[in-house]
Length: 167
Image (cartoon, rainbow, N blue to C red; front, side, top):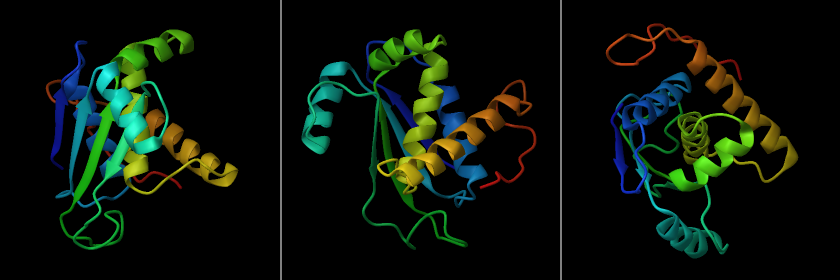
């Protein structure tokens, strides 16, 4: 599953971990292994511009997801889809640092959470309604728990075993 990560922010991030969590989430949700995704880390000014332009809200946010409008075969998590460009997940490490401090964990942990959240948005999950929020955040927690518990190969960080995620 090709996951491209680019860091255009002023803060160093663990690009390989971001690619690995996205790959893990897509695999756990049965997305075609040929699907492509990009992750972009940006500074607060650029994130503010995106946030205002696309969401109509001022100031930087933590994560934005931009799904591609044209998929080869509909939703990429449908059975037997063809290769597709899923879209872009945009993260703001500066916001992640603030949120991580408030939550009592590291910026890397916060970015892993935000990348997972962004991928779920790309796949059509949302949290605008209470039922949708419960579903999305429940799945997000299950995925993050599985990620943390999965044994990792020493050189690649890839999970050694994968099982289906209960929905």
